[in-house]
Image 1 (cartoon, rainbow, N blue to C red):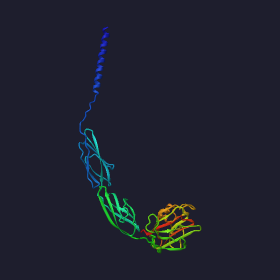
Image 2 (image 1 turned 60 degrees about the vertical axis):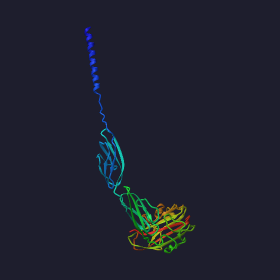
Image 3 (image 1 turned 90 degrees about the vertical axis):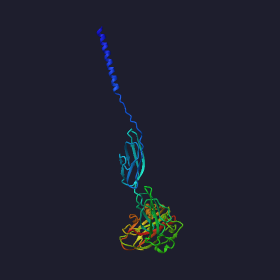
Image 4 (image 1 turned 90 degrees about the horizontal axis):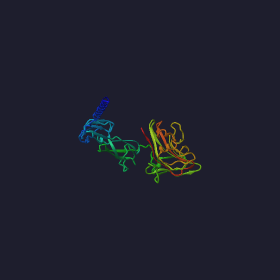
Length: 383
């Protein structure tokens, strides 16, 4: 009996000891965290301007570490870095400031990296009153062109402009730079008449410069027509008055010009013709013979640019489509007929001497369905 009692007492004592040990283990597993008290940082910075090399001055408060993003894919952990940008521009710069207490704040600023703007331009002009202006300004963010001819200003970077007449014009380019600064450049542009054709503007009295081919003289055109004109035309234009004929009508006028072998010449014009024409055509020739005007694909033939109902201006025995504007673009959009299509309207002279520029308009048993108008016919040297 006594032996049994002792065993129970031992068991109870052992259990108490084990429980005490477990409690002790639980107490040892408690991890105390230390909270570092501190103020939140403020983020601010300034920067230099007027160069691609920018010095950033960090004016943040209570910062322990810093992280810069310069807006061009690069970064830095310096407090006040100096950064060089590869190209001018406006960059979103971000500064993140971390404090020792674990707080962080950020600040973002648009930083212009650029030298001051300098306005300048050149004029690439090959003919008559048309000109392409090339902007060569330094550090330009926005531009305004004043062409000095009382026409609307342009904000295009490299505009194309057509002056209304020959003469001298003061062209002014105003440039606003990336730094907000303004630079102005003015130049006197002389617009000279380099058109080898006389009377290519088809004003009243210009008919004296043109001859009619005797074999095609049934639709005499009107010079100096002002009631209507093609898009891009000025003053008067040439009108082939609306015609219809069951047997066929045609008319061809031409003018001689002098060329030099190997030189390139551009043939251009603006034209307007209505939709609904049938079996009609408007064709431009460059010929070596005043009595040879043929549609031929042979090298150095005289057939150059044409709108022809039989060659995809509309469709054969169907209505033509309306055209209004640049001759070359109209031809490309309506059949690409003529040797000048492949050269973008540029002719290379194979001999030195006289060429003849011809305009032919007519119909084969059909109708024009309205007036056909031509203006600004130019044949000008390019080199």
